[in-house]
Image 1 (cartoon, chains in turn green, cyan):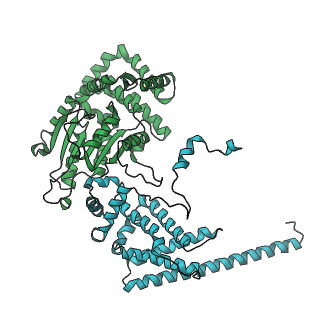
Image 2 (image 1 turned 120 degrees about the vertical axis):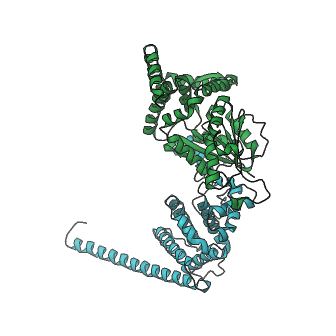
Image 3 (image 1 turned 135 degrees about the vertical axis):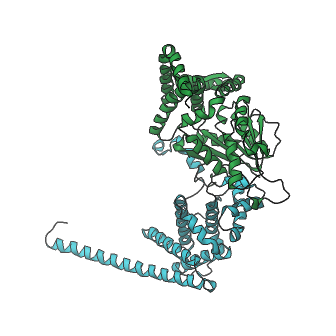
Length: 331
Length: 244
Protein backbone atom coordinates (compact mmCIF):
# COMPACT_ATOMS: atom_id res chain seq x y z
CA UNK A 1 0.00 0.00 0.00
CA UNK A 2 2.85 2.39 0.87
CA UNK A 3 4.17 2.13 -2.64
CA UNK A 4 0.92 3.42 -4.01
CA UNK A 5 1.13 6.77 -2.24
CA UNK A 6 4.00 8.38 -4.20
CA UNK A 7 2.74 6.81 -7.41
CA UNK A 8 -0.72 8.09 -6.81
CA UNK A 9 0.46 11.58 -6.02
CA UNK A 10 2.50 11.62 -9.17
CA UNK A 11 -0.37 10.39 -11.25
CA UNK A 12 -2.78 12.90 -9.85
CA UNK A 13 -0.38 15.79 -10.25
CA UNK A 14 0.36 14.79 -13.80
CA UNK A 15 -3.26 14.56 -14.72
CA UNK A 16 -4.54 17.50 -12.70
CA UNK A 17 -3.95 20.51 -14.94
CA UNK A 18 -4.99 18.85 -18.13
CA UNK A 19 -7.94 16.69 -17.27
CA UNK A 20 -9.40 17.55 -13.87
CA UNK A 21 -12.24 19.58 -15.26
CA UNK A 22 -12.84 17.13 -17.99
CA UNK A 23 -13.15 14.04 -15.82
CA UNK A 24 -15.37 15.53 -13.16
CA UNK A 25 -17.72 16.61 -15.90
CA UNK A 26 -17.65 13.25 -17.48
CA UNK A 27 -18.51 11.62 -14.15
CA UNK A 28 -21.44 14.00 -13.78
CA UNK A 29 -22.61 13.22 -17.25
CA UNK A 30 -22.44 9.49 -16.55
CA UNK A 31 -24.46 9.93 -13.41
CA UNK A 32 -27.08 11.93 -15.14
CA UNK A 33 -27.25 9.28 -17.81
CA UNK A 34 -27.63 6.61 -15.16
CA UNK A 35 -30.27 8.32 -13.05
CA UNK A 36 -32.81 9.57 -15.51
CA UNK A 37 -33.80 9.34 -19.10
CA UNK A 38 -31.83 12.39 -20.10
CA UNK A 39 -30.66 12.96 -23.62
CA UNK A 40 -27.74 10.61 -23.18
CA UNK A 41 -29.65 7.52 -22.11
CA UNK A 42 -32.44 8.03 -24.60
CA UNK A 43 -29.77 8.35 -27.23
CA UNK A 44 -28.39 5.11 -25.89
CA UNK A 45 -31.77 3.44 -26.21
CA UNK A 46 -32.05 4.43 -29.83
CA UNK A 47 -28.64 2.96 -30.53
CA UNK A 48 -29.83 -0.14 -28.72
CA UNK A 49 -32.80 -0.47 -30.95
CA UNK A 50 -30.54 0.02 -33.91
CA UNK A 51 -28.18 -2.64 -32.66
CA UNK A 52 -30.94 -5.17 -32.27
CA UNK A 53 -31.92 -4.55 -35.85
CA UNK A 54 -28.50 -5.04 -37.30
CA UNK A 55 -26.87 -8.01 -35.60
CA UNK A 56 -23.29 -6.82 -35.86
CA UNK A 57 -23.03 -4.58 -32.80
CA UNK A 58 -23.14 -4.97 -29.03
CA UNK A 59 -22.57 -2.69 -26.07
CA UNK A 60 -19.22 -2.03 -24.47
CA UNK A 61 -20.14 -0.12 -21.34
CA UNK A 62 -22.27 2.76 -22.59
CA UNK A 63 -20.75 2.78 -26.06
CA UNK A 64 -21.78 0.58 -28.94
CA UNK A 65 -19.08 -1.47 -30.64
CA UNK A 66 -18.93 -4.17 -33.28
CA UNK A 67 -19.52 -7.65 -31.84
CA UNK A 68 -16.17 -8.83 -33.08
CA UNK A 69 -14.46 -5.95 -31.30
CA UNK A 70 -16.02 -6.48 -27.87
CA UNK A 71 -13.91 -9.46 -26.88
CA UNK A 72 -10.68 -7.69 -27.72
CA UNK A 73 -11.78 -4.47 -25.99
CA UNK A 74 -12.69 -6.47 -22.86
CA UNK A 75 -9.39 -8.29 -23.23
CA UNK A 76 -7.55 -4.99 -23.24
CA UNK A 77 -9.39 -3.84 -20.13
CA UNK A 78 -8.50 -6.93 -18.15
CA UNK A 79 -4.92 -7.10 -19.41
CA UNK A 80 -4.40 -3.62 -18.08
CA UNK A 81 -6.00 -4.26 -14.70
CA UNK A 82 -4.70 -7.82 -14.12
CA UNK A 83 -1.83 -6.96 -11.80
CA UNK A 84 -3.86 -4.73 -9.50
CA UNK A 85 -7.16 -6.63 -9.87
CA UNK A 86 -7.44 -8.02 -6.35
CA UNK A 87 -6.30 -4.81 -4.64
CA UNK A 88 -8.79 -2.86 -6.71
CA UNK A 89 -11.61 -5.21 -5.78
CA UNK A 90 -10.87 -4.61 -2.10
CA UNK A 91 -10.87 -0.85 -2.52
CA UNK A 92 -13.92 -0.61 -4.76
CA UNK A 93 -16.16 -2.87 -2.68
CA UNK A 94 -14.62 -1.87 0.68
CA UNK A 95 -13.67 -5.52 1.12
CA UNK A 96 -17.23 -6.76 0.83
CA UNK A 97 -16.47 -8.78 -2.32
CA UNK A 98 -14.65 -11.25 -0.06
CA UNK A 99 -17.82 -11.81 1.96
CA UNK A 100 -19.85 -12.27 -1.21
CA UNK A 101 -17.38 -14.79 -2.62
CA UNK A 102 -17.16 -16.67 0.68
CA UNK A 103 -20.92 -16.87 0.89
CA UNK A 104 -21.17 -17.89 -2.77
CA UNK A 105 -18.81 -20.82 -2.34
CA UNK A 106 -20.21 -21.85 1.05
CA UNK A 107 -23.75 -21.95 -0.31
CA UNK A 108 -22.58 -24.16 -3.20
CA UNK A 109 -20.87 -26.54 -0.77
CA UNK A 110 -18.30 -27.97 -3.21
CA UNK A 111 -16.62 -31.28 -2.47
CA UNK A 112 -17.98 -34.70 -1.56
CA UNK A 113 -17.88 -36.02 1.98
CA UNK A 114 -16.07 -39.35 2.26
CA UNK A 115 -19.31 -40.92 3.55
CA UNK A 116 -20.96 -40.26 0.20
CA UNK A 117 -18.08 -41.32 -2.03
CA UNK A 118 -18.67 -44.89 -3.15
CA UNK A 119 -15.46 -46.83 -3.64
CA UNK A 120 -14.64 -47.64 -7.24
CA UNK A 121 -16.07 -44.51 -8.77
CA UNK A 122 -13.74 -41.64 -9.54
CA UNK A 123 -13.82 -39.54 -6.42
CA UNK A 124 -14.18 -35.80 -5.96
CA UNK A 125 -15.92 -33.26 -8.10
CA UNK A 126 -14.77 -31.56 -11.26
CA UNK A 127 -15.35 -27.84 -10.99
CA UNK A 128 -14.99 -25.39 -13.85
CA UNK A 129 -14.43 -21.79 -12.80
CA UNK A 130 -15.01 -19.63 -15.83
CA UNK A 131 -13.57 -16.12 -16.00
CA UNK A 132 -11.73 -17.08 -12.83
CA UNK A 133 -8.32 -15.78 -13.93
CA UNK A 134 -6.88 -14.68 -10.63
CA UNK A 135 -8.15 -17.85 -8.97
CA UNK A 136 -9.81 -16.39 -5.89
CA UNK A 137 -13.00 -18.40 -6.41
CA UNK A 138 -11.07 -21.54 -7.29
CA UNK A 139 -9.01 -21.24 -4.11
CA UNK A 140 -12.19 -20.92 -2.06
CA UNK A 141 -13.68 -24.00 -3.78
CA UNK A 142 -10.63 -26.07 -2.96
CA UNK A 143 -10.40 -24.76 0.60
CA UNK A 144 -14.05 -25.54 1.23
CA UNK A 145 -13.83 -29.01 -0.29
CA UNK A 146 -10.67 -29.86 1.66
CA UNK A 147 -11.37 -28.28 5.04
CA UNK A 148 -15.13 -28.57 5.35
CA UNK A 149 -15.95 -31.71 3.39
CA UNK A 150 -12.59 -33.52 3.89
CA UNK A 151 -12.43 -34.14 0.19
CA UNK A 152 -8.92 -34.15 -1.22
CA UNK A 153 -9.86 -35.24 -4.74
CA UNK A 154 -12.00 -32.38 -6.01
CA UNK A 155 -10.22 -30.42 -8.72
CA UNK A 156 -10.81 -27.07 -10.37
CA UNK A 157 -10.21 -25.97 -13.95
CA UNK A 158 -9.67 -22.23 -14.05
CA UNK A 159 -10.70 -20.93 -17.44
CA UNK A 160 -10.18 -17.39 -18.64
CA UNK A 161 -10.00 -15.74 -22.03
CA UNK A 162 -7.22 -13.49 -20.86
CA UNK A 163 -3.65 -14.88 -20.44
CA UNK A 164 -2.66 -11.95 -18.21
CA UNK A 165 -5.37 -12.76 -15.69
CA UNK A 166 -4.44 -16.46 -15.81
CA UNK A 167 -0.82 -15.52 -15.09
CA UNK A 168 -2.02 -13.83 -11.89
CA UNK A 169 -3.82 -17.03 -10.92
CA UNK A 170 -0.77 -19.15 -11.61
CA UNK A 171 1.26 -16.80 -9.42
CA UNK A 172 -1.29 -17.20 -6.63
CA UNK A 173 -1.40 -21.00 -6.83
CA UNK A 174 2.37 -21.44 -7.16
CA UNK A 175 2.95 -21.97 -3.43
CA UNK A 176 -0.34 -23.70 -2.62
CA UNK A 177 -0.48 -27.44 -1.94
CA UNK A 178 -3.29 -27.73 -4.51
CA UNK A 179 -0.86 -27.01 -7.32
CA UNK A 180 1.44 -29.81 -6.14
CA UNK A 181 -1.41 -32.32 -5.99
CA UNK A 182 -2.53 -31.38 -9.47
CA UNK A 183 -5.93 -30.28 -8.26
CA UNK A 184 -5.88 -27.06 -10.21
CA UNK A 185 -5.39 -26.54 -13.92
CA UNK A 186 -5.50 -23.50 -16.16
CA UNK A 187 -7.25 -23.16 -19.48
CA UNK A 188 -7.18 -20.22 -21.81
CA UNK A 189 -10.53 -20.32 -23.58
CA UNK A 190 -13.50 -18.26 -24.60
CA UNK A 191 -16.49 -19.19 -22.43
CA UNK A 192 -18.75 -19.13 -25.50
CA UNK A 193 -16.81 -22.01 -27.00
CA UNK A 194 -15.01 -24.34 -24.58
CA UNK A 195 -14.75 -27.29 -26.98
CA UNK A 196 -11.64 -28.58 -25.16
CA UNK A 197 -13.95 -29.66 -22.33
CA UNK A 198 -16.12 -32.60 -23.22
CA UNK A 199 -19.88 -32.67 -22.72
CA UNK A 200 -21.40 -33.98 -19.46
CA UNK A 201 -18.11 -33.89 -17.59
CA UNK A 202 -18.39 -31.05 -15.07
CA UNK A 203 -20.15 -31.15 -11.67
CA UNK A 204 -20.10 -27.47 -10.91
CA UNK A 205 -19.72 -24.52 -13.26
CA UNK A 206 -19.10 -21.18 -11.57
CA UNK A 207 -18.65 -17.73 -13.00
CA UNK A 208 -18.12 -14.82 -10.62
CA UNK A 209 -18.21 -11.27 -11.91
CA UNK A 210 -17.40 -12.46 -15.40
CA UNK A 211 -20.54 -13.15 -17.41
CA UNK A 212 -21.17 -9.40 -17.65
CA UNK A 213 -18.26 -9.12 -20.07
CA UNK A 214 -19.31 -11.91 -22.42
CA UNK A 215 -20.42 -10.85 -25.87
CA UNK A 216 -23.05 -13.61 -26.19
CA UNK A 217 -24.33 -14.50 -22.71
CA UNK A 218 -26.90 -16.95 -24.12
CA UNK A 219 -24.20 -18.83 -26.01
CA UNK A 220 -22.09 -19.08 -22.86
CA UNK A 221 -25.11 -20.40 -20.92
CA UNK A 222 -25.78 -23.05 -23.57
CA UNK A 223 -22.12 -24.03 -23.43
CA UNK A 224 -22.38 -24.32 -19.63
CA UNK A 225 -25.42 -26.56 -20.09
CA UNK A 226 -23.45 -28.74 -22.50
CA UNK A 227 -20.38 -29.31 -20.32
CA UNK A 228 -22.33 -29.97 -17.09
CA UNK A 229 -23.22 -33.51 -16.05
CA UNK A 230 -26.93 -34.20 -15.60
CA UNK A 231 -27.66 -32.83 -12.15
CA UNK A 232 -24.70 -30.47 -12.39
CA UNK A 233 -25.01 -26.94 -11.12
CA UNK A 234 -24.46 -23.64 -12.88
CA UNK A 235 -23.77 -20.80 -10.44
CA UNK A 236 -23.16 -17.18 -11.19
CA UNK A 237 -22.22 -14.29 -8.93
CA UNK A 238 -22.77 -10.97 -10.65
CA UNK A 239 -23.57 -7.33 -10.08
CA UNK A 240 -27.09 -6.11 -10.66
CA UNK A 241 -27.91 -2.96 -12.64
CA UNK A 242 -30.20 -1.46 -10.01
CA UNK A 243 -30.91 -1.86 -6.31
CA UNK A 244 -34.53 -2.36 -5.36
CA UNK A 245 -34.43 0.45 -2.78
CA UNK A 246 -34.32 3.79 -4.67
CA UNK A 247 -32.53 5.69 -1.87
CA UNK A 248 -29.79 3.09 -1.52
CA UNK A 249 -29.63 2.91 -5.29
CA UNK A 250 -28.94 6.64 -5.56
CA UNK A 251 -26.15 6.40 -2.98
CA UNK A 252 -24.72 3.33 -4.68
CA UNK A 253 -24.72 4.98 -8.11
CA UNK A 254 -22.92 8.01 -6.66
CA UNK A 255 -20.27 5.69 -5.33
CA UNK A 256 -19.88 3.61 -8.46
CA UNK A 257 -19.83 6.43 -10.99
CA UNK A 258 -17.82 8.93 -8.97
CA UNK A 259 -15.54 6.93 -6.70
CA UNK A 260 -14.68 3.77 -8.59
CA UNK A 261 -13.15 5.38 -11.70
CA UNK A 262 -11.27 7.75 -9.40
CA UNK A 263 -9.87 4.90 -7.31
CA UNK A 264 -8.94 3.18 -10.58
CA UNK A 265 -7.10 6.27 -11.72
CA UNK A 266 -5.18 6.68 -8.48
CA UNK A 267 -4.32 3.06 -7.75
CA UNK A 268 -4.15 1.38 -11.14
CA UNK A 269 -3.50 4.48 -13.28
CA UNK A 270 -6.28 3.35 -15.56
CA UNK A 271 -9.48 5.35 -15.43
CA UNK A 272 -11.03 4.05 -18.63
CA UNK A 273 -10.98 0.39 -17.59
CA UNK A 274 -12.88 1.14 -14.40
CA UNK A 275 -15.22 3.45 -16.20
CA UNK A 276 -15.99 0.48 -18.43
CA UNK A 277 -16.51 -1.68 -15.34
CA UNK A 278 -19.24 0.51 -13.85
CA UNK A 279 -20.86 1.07 -17.22
CA UNK A 280 -20.96 -2.64 -17.94
CA UNK A 281 -22.76 -3.20 -14.61
CA UNK A 282 -25.36 -0.71 -15.76
CA UNK A 283 -25.91 -2.66 -18.99
CA UNK A 284 -26.26 -6.08 -17.39
CA UNK A 285 -29.80 -7.57 -17.39
CA UNK A 286 -31.87 -7.39 -14.21
CA UNK A 287 -32.10 -10.42 -11.91
CA UNK A 288 -35.44 -11.47 -13.37
CA UNK A 289 -34.27 -11.13 -16.97
CA UNK A 290 -31.09 -13.03 -16.25
CA UNK A 291 -33.03 -15.77 -14.47
CA UNK A 292 -35.13 -16.04 -17.63
CA UNK A 293 -31.96 -16.46 -19.70
CA UNK A 294 -30.72 -19.27 -17.44
CA UNK A 295 -34.10 -20.96 -17.68
CA UNK A 296 -34.08 -20.62 -21.45
CA UNK A 297 -30.76 -22.47 -21.61
CA UNK A 298 -32.58 -25.46 -20.05
CA UNK A 299 -31.72 -25.16 -16.36
CA UNK A 300 -34.05 -25.70 -13.42
CA UNK A 301 -34.13 -22.62 -11.24
CA UNK A 302 -33.86 -23.35 -7.49
CA UNK A 303 -36.53 -21.84 -5.25
CA UNK A 304 -39.03 -21.50 -8.06
CA UNK A 305 -42.31 -23.29 -7.41
CA UNK A 306 -44.86 -24.60 -9.84
CA UNK A 307 -47.74 -22.99 -7.95
CA UNK A 308 -46.82 -19.41 -8.72
CA UNK A 309 -45.65 -18.70 -5.19
CA UNK A 310 -42.16 -17.79 -4.05
CA UNK A 311 -40.75 -16.70 -7.37
CA UNK A 312 -37.30 -15.99 -6.07
CA UNK A 313 -34.91 -17.77 -8.35
CA UNK A 314 -31.91 -15.78 -7.16
CA UNK A 315 -30.34 -14.45 -3.97
CA UNK A 316 -29.61 -10.77 -3.50
CA UNK A 317 -26.44 -9.79 -1.64
CA UNK A 318 -25.92 -6.50 0.22
CA UNK A 319 -29.37 -5.08 -0.55
CA UNK A 320 -29.06 -6.27 -4.15
CA UNK A 321 -25.71 -4.83 -5.26
CA UNK A 322 -24.79 -8.30 -6.38
CA UNK A 323 -26.88 -11.43 -6.86
CA UNK A 324 -26.29 -15.18 -6.91
CA UNK A 325 -28.04 -17.08 -9.69
CA UNK A 326 -28.11 -20.84 -9.83
CA UNK A 327 -29.40 -23.41 -12.26
CA UNK A 328 -29.50 -27.20 -12.08
CA UNK A 329 -29.24 -29.29 -15.23
CA UNK A 330 -32.12 -31.80 -15.16
CA UNK A 331 -31.07 -35.44 -15.01
CA UNK B 1 -67.98 0.63 -17.50
CA UNK B 2 -66.18 -2.32 -19.05
CA UNK B 3 -63.13 -0.20 -19.50
CA UNK B 4 -63.13 0.75 -15.84
CA UNK B 5 -63.51 -2.84 -14.67
CA UNK B 6 -60.96 -4.19 -17.09
CA UNK B 7 -57.70 -5.33 -15.49
CA UNK B 8 -54.76 -3.10 -16.38
CA UNK B 9 -52.63 -4.75 -19.06
CA UNK B 10 -49.56 -4.78 -16.85
CA UNK B 11 -51.07 -7.21 -14.34
CA UNK B 12 -53.01 -9.42 -16.76
CA UNK B 13 -50.20 -11.96 -17.07
CA UNK B 14 -50.24 -12.30 -13.28
CA UNK B 15 -53.86 -13.39 -13.36
CA UNK B 16 -53.19 -15.89 -16.12
CA UNK B 17 -50.40 -17.54 -14.18
CA UNK B 18 -52.32 -17.72 -10.90
CA UNK B 19 -52.80 -21.45 -11.24
CA UNK B 20 -53.04 -21.93 -7.48
CA UNK B 21 -56.58 -21.20 -6.39
CA UNK B 22 -56.97 -19.91 -2.84
CA UNK B 23 -60.14 -21.99 -2.40
CA UNK B 24 -61.16 -25.63 -2.59
CA UNK B 25 -62.56 -26.72 -5.91
CA UNK B 26 -64.17 -29.99 -6.96
CA UNK B 27 -63.82 -29.17 -10.65
CA UNK B 28 -60.17 -28.24 -10.92
CA UNK B 29 -57.30 -30.46 -9.95
CA UNK B 30 -54.66 -28.46 -8.11
CA UNK B 31 -51.26 -28.75 -9.80
CA UNK B 32 -48.53 -30.09 -7.55
CA UNK B 33 -46.46 -27.25 -6.13
CA UNK B 34 -43.30 -29.23 -6.86
CA UNK B 35 -41.55 -29.80 -10.16
CA UNK B 36 -40.79 -33.33 -11.35
CA UNK B 37 -37.09 -33.25 -10.41
CA UNK B 38 -37.82 -31.79 -6.98
CA UNK B 39 -40.51 -34.38 -6.32
CA UNK B 40 -38.16 -37.23 -7.22
CA UNK B 41 -35.29 -36.01 -5.06
CA UNK B 42 -37.42 -35.04 -2.07
CA UNK B 43 -39.48 -38.22 -1.98
CA UNK B 44 -36.30 -40.28 -2.25
CA UNK B 45 -34.82 -38.11 0.50
CA UNK B 46 -37.80 -38.76 2.76
CA UNK B 47 -37.16 -42.49 2.66
CA UNK B 48 -33.80 -41.80 4.32
CA UNK B 49 -35.26 -39.62 7.07
CA UNK B 50 -35.79 -42.54 9.52
CA UNK B 51 -32.04 -43.31 9.35
CA UNK B 52 -30.46 -39.88 8.74
CA UNK B 53 -33.13 -37.58 10.18
CA UNK B 54 -34.16 -34.32 8.56
CA UNK B 55 -30.59 -33.51 7.54
CA UNK B 56 -28.51 -32.64 4.55
CA UNK B 57 -27.36 -36.28 4.46
CA UNK B 58 -30.90 -37.51 3.83
CA UNK B 59 -31.31 -34.98 1.04
CA UNK B 60 -27.97 -35.82 -0.57
CA UNK B 61 -28.57 -39.58 -0.37
CA UNK B 62 -32.00 -39.08 -1.89
CA UNK B 63 -30.55 -37.05 -4.76
CA UNK B 64 -27.97 -39.75 -5.45
CA UNK B 65 -30.69 -42.45 -5.40
CA UNK B 66 -32.51 -40.87 -8.33
CA UNK B 67 -29.46 -40.18 -10.45
CA UNK B 68 -28.54 -36.69 -9.33
CA UNK B 69 -25.23 -35.50 -7.91
CA UNK B 70 -24.26 -34.30 -4.41
CA UNK B 71 -24.03 -30.79 -5.75
CA UNK B 72 -27.58 -30.99 -7.16
CA UNK B 73 -28.93 -30.30 -3.67
CA UNK B 74 -28.32 -26.67 -4.63
CA UNK B 75 -31.77 -27.01 -6.14
CA UNK B 76 -33.06 -26.56 -2.58
CA UNK B 77 -31.97 -23.22 -1.16
CA UNK B 78 -33.45 -24.03 2.26
CA UNK B 79 -31.72 -27.40 2.51
CA UNK B 80 -33.27 -29.90 4.97
CA UNK B 81 -36.27 -27.65 5.60
CA UNK B 82 -37.38 -28.42 2.04
CA UNK B 83 -37.70 -32.05 3.13
CA UNK B 84 -39.93 -31.01 6.03
CA UNK B 85 -42.02 -28.76 3.83
CA UNK B 86 -42.37 -31.43 1.16
CA UNK B 87 -43.52 -33.89 3.79
CA UNK B 88 -46.08 -31.43 5.16
CA UNK B 89 -47.44 -30.56 1.71
CA UNK B 90 -47.72 -34.14 0.47
CA UNK B 91 -49.34 -35.34 3.71
CA UNK B 92 -51.83 -32.49 3.62
CA UNK B 93 -52.76 -33.17 0.00
CA UNK B 94 -52.88 -36.92 0.67
CA UNK B 95 -55.20 -36.60 3.67
CA UNK B 96 -58.35 -36.72 1.56
CA UNK B 97 -57.33 -40.11 0.17
CA UNK B 98 -56.45 -41.57 3.57
CA UNK B 99 -59.91 -41.25 5.03
CA UNK B 100 -63.47 -41.84 3.85
CA UNK B 101 -66.62 -41.02 5.80
CA UNK B 102 -69.21 -43.71 4.99
CA UNK B 103 -72.14 -42.41 7.04
CA UNK B 104 -73.68 -39.03 6.58
CA UNK B 105 -74.75 -39.02 10.22
CA UNK B 106 -71.28 -38.41 11.61
CA UNK B 107 -71.10 -34.89 13.05
CA UNK B 108 -68.59 -32.27 11.90
CA UNK B 109 -66.86 -32.37 15.30
CA UNK B 110 -66.36 -36.14 15.16
CA UNK B 111 -65.03 -35.88 11.60
CA UNK B 112 -62.52 -33.21 12.64
CA UNK B 113 -61.34 -35.50 15.43
CA UNK B 114 -60.80 -38.47 13.13
CA UNK B 115 -59.11 -36.30 10.49
CA UNK B 116 -56.63 -34.94 13.03
CA UNK B 117 -55.94 -38.48 14.31
CA UNK B 118 -55.49 -39.72 10.75
CA UNK B 119 -53.02 -36.94 9.98
CA UNK B 120 -51.06 -37.76 13.15
CA UNK B 121 -51.12 -41.46 12.28
CA UNK B 122 -49.46 -40.55 8.97
CA UNK B 123 -46.44 -39.33 10.96
CA UNK B 124 -46.14 -42.80 12.47
CA UNK B 125 -46.85 -44.73 9.24
CA UNK B 126 -44.22 -42.84 7.26
CA UNK B 127 -41.65 -43.49 9.98
CA UNK B 128 -40.80 -39.85 10.62
CA UNK B 129 -42.41 -39.69 14.09
CA UNK B 130 -39.18 -40.52 15.99
CA UNK B 131 -37.45 -37.76 13.98
CA UNK B 132 -40.27 -35.26 14.14
CA UNK B 133 -38.61 -33.16 16.86
CA UNK B 134 -35.86 -32.34 14.35
CA UNK B 135 -38.50 -31.18 11.91
CA UNK B 136 -40.17 -29.03 14.58
CA UNK B 137 -36.77 -27.52 15.38
CA UNK B 138 -36.23 -26.64 11.71
CA UNK B 139 -39.75 -25.24 11.45
CA UNK B 140 -39.15 -22.97 14.43
CA UNK B 141 -36.11 -21.29 12.88
CA UNK B 142 -36.87 -17.64 12.20
CA UNK B 143 -36.48 -17.89 8.43
CA UNK B 144 -38.80 -20.92 8.26
CA UNK B 145 -41.57 -19.73 10.57
CA UNK B 146 -43.68 -18.01 7.86
CA UNK B 147 -43.65 -21.10 5.63
CA UNK B 148 -44.42 -23.39 8.59
CA UNK B 149 -47.34 -21.26 9.77
CA UNK B 150 -48.71 -21.08 6.23
CA UNK B 151 -48.61 -24.86 6.07
CA UNK B 152 -50.34 -25.17 9.45
CA UNK B 153 -53.05 -22.78 8.30
CA UNK B 154 -53.54 -24.76 5.09
CA UNK B 155 -53.76 -28.03 7.02
CA UNK B 156 -56.35 -26.59 9.42
CA UNK B 157 -58.34 -25.30 6.46
CA UNK B 158 -58.07 -28.67 4.71
CA UNK B 159 -59.36 -30.51 7.78
CA UNK B 160 -62.38 -28.24 8.19
CA UNK B 161 -63.11 -28.52 4.48
CA UNK B 162 -62.89 -32.31 4.49
CA UNK B 163 -65.05 -32.42 7.63
CA UNK B 164 -67.79 -30.74 5.63
CA UNK B 165 -67.88 -27.46 7.50
CA UNK B 166 -69.84 -24.86 5.56
CA UNK B 167 -69.69 -21.90 7.95
CA UNK B 168 -69.59 -18.54 6.21
CA UNK B 169 -69.68 -16.29 9.28
CA UNK B 170 -66.86 -15.06 11.49
CA UNK B 171 -66.56 -18.53 13.04
CA UNK B 172 -64.81 -19.52 9.79
CA UNK B 173 -61.74 -17.78 11.21
CA UNK B 174 -62.04 -18.80 14.84
CA UNK B 175 -62.56 -22.45 13.89
CA UNK B 176 -59.44 -22.53 11.77
CA UNK B 177 -57.35 -20.64 14.30
CA UNK B 178 -58.38 -22.83 17.24
CA UNK B 179 -57.92 -26.07 15.31
CA UNK B 180 -54.46 -24.93 14.18
CA UNK B 181 -53.53 -24.38 17.82
CA UNK B 182 -54.88 -27.74 18.90
CA UNK B 183 -53.20 -29.58 16.06
CA UNK B 184 -49.82 -27.98 16.75
CA UNK B 185 -50.06 -28.81 20.47
CA UNK B 186 -51.10 -32.40 19.79
CA UNK B 187 -48.29 -32.90 17.32
CA UNK B 188 -45.73 -31.67 19.83
CA UNK B 189 -47.27 -34.03 22.42
CA UNK B 190 -47.03 -36.92 19.95
CA UNK B 191 -43.23 -36.55 19.62
CA UNK B 192 -42.80 -37.55 23.27
CA UNK B 193 -45.61 -40.07 23.47
CA UNK B 194 -44.37 -43.48 24.69
CA UNK B 195 -47.74 -45.20 25.08
CA UNK B 196 -48.86 -48.17 22.98
CA UNK B 197 -50.51 -47.19 19.71
CA UNK B 198 -50.29 -43.52 20.75
CA UNK B 199 -53.28 -43.86 23.11
CA UNK B 200 -52.06 -40.88 25.17
CA UNK B 201 -51.98 -38.62 22.11
CA UNK B 202 -55.56 -39.55 21.37
CA UNK B 203 -56.62 -38.72 24.92
CA UNK B 204 -54.65 -35.48 24.79
CA UNK B 205 -56.50 -34.51 21.62
CA UNK B 206 -59.87 -35.37 23.19
CA UNK B 207 -59.12 -33.14 26.19
CA UNK B 208 -58.15 -30.24 23.89
CA UNK B 209 -61.29 -30.64 21.77
CA UNK B 210 -63.42 -30.86 24.91
CA UNK B 211 -61.77 -27.68 26.19
CA UNK B 212 -62.51 -25.97 22.90
CA UNK B 213 -66.16 -26.99 23.11
CA UNK B 214 -66.42 -25.69 26.70
CA UNK B 215 -64.70 -22.42 25.88
CA UNK B 216 -66.69 -22.09 22.67
CA UNK B 217 -70.06 -22.54 24.40
CA UNK B 218 -68.97 -20.29 27.29
CA UNK B 219 -67.97 -17.67 24.73
CA UNK B 220 -71.29 -18.08 22.94
CA UNK B 221 -73.26 -17.80 26.18
CA UNK B 222 -71.29 -14.76 27.27
CA UNK B 223 -71.85 -13.03 23.96
CA UNK B 224 -75.56 -13.82 24.17
CA UNK B 225 -75.72 -12.40 27.71
CA UNK B 226 -73.80 -9.26 26.65
CA UNK B 227 -76.12 -8.79 23.70
CA UNK B 228 -79.22 -9.18 25.88
CA UNK B 229 -77.94 -6.78 28.53
CA UNK B 230 -76.97 -4.27 25.85
CA UNK B 231 -80.45 -4.38 24.34
CA UNK B 232 -82.01 -4.02 27.78
CA UNK B 233 -79.82 -1.02 28.54
CA UNK B 234 -80.83 0.71 25.31
CA UNK B 235 -84.50 0.08 26.06
CA UNK B 236 -84.08 1.38 29.62
CA UNK B 237 -82.46 4.59 28.37
CA UNK B 238 -85.21 5.05 25.77
CA UNK B 239 -87.86 4.68 28.46
CA UNK B 240 -86.14 7.54 30.29
CA UNK B 241 -86.57 9.74 27.24
CA UNK B 242 -83.01 9.48 25.80
CA UNK B 243 -83.27 9.68 22.02
CA UNK B 244 -81.27 6.72 20.79
